[in-house]
Length: 189
Image (cartoon, rainbow, N blue to C red; front, side, top):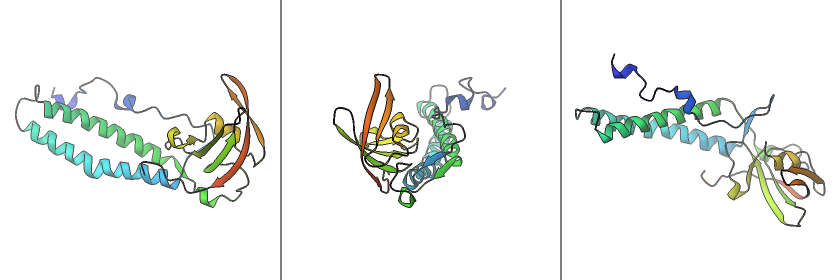
């Protein structure tokens, strides 16, 4: 049988997909317009630029003869599988995405998806977070998932409210200081 019809690694491609964070039952995969645009840009870059480049390299390397010890061919095939997996992953994520623009929040007095919230913890330390989609999380820039424990504790709170956050270390009280709805612009986008 030709090698073209036999999987080289013996695994199902979908087993290699990155694990999608679980979406709460009955919920959608919420994402900001900037996050949606970033994922779509990455998908189009993979399809229109990166994949064709790798296909050309693999084609050139295959034309050089013996493929068993051809580094360009072997690496190219591996990279092509990685690109195809990422394309499938991004396609699935974009298919289930529900774009929510924080600037269009109809109830800006309460914390919902897209809110930028400043709160004080029990030690009095202030933290500012923006509640974003699971595909946009960037703790170094204060972007937390809407399904994270902190975001869930803050959801529906108003300025001046004290909410309870359950952590492995115990229960912590968070005081909501400020709620704003600003456009989210992730560092990479």
